[in-house]
Amino acid sequence: MHSMISYWLKYYRHETGLTQQQVADRLKIERSTYTYYETGKTKPDINTLIKIAKVFNINYTQLLEGIEEELEAAVADIHSGGPTDEDSLKYRTHATTKYEVELLFLVRNLTPKQRKEVMSLAKKLISENETGK
Image (cartoon, rainbow, N blue to C red):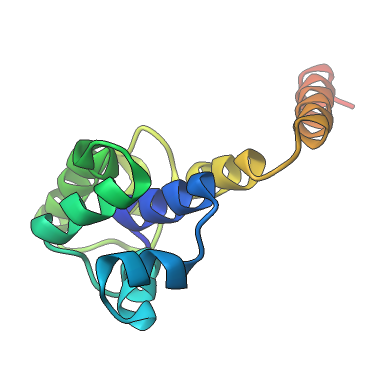
């Protein structure tokens, strides 16, 4: 299950051009342990987050961006008796949905030319929706 922390770990690793193995080596942990952090199977403790942030040359708080909304959603799920389906209640209180985060991550990995093409297509689709085509 992906979390905001796992999203940011993958995002910053890609931004720095490192492999999972390279990050794991710098942290002196097994690659599989780091992979679990990135896939959300496990979450790193605060000391590990600080070490990871140093590898990425960022402030550790950047790895926690969006965590408040994630925690609020989890609390809302508990109080509501649990989600009716995986995405409905869990992501409803987030500023962005899981789909939007995944889309953003994909777009960030495109070339500038590809990004322009995606933007152009998105604007065209919105325009068609508004005109009823």
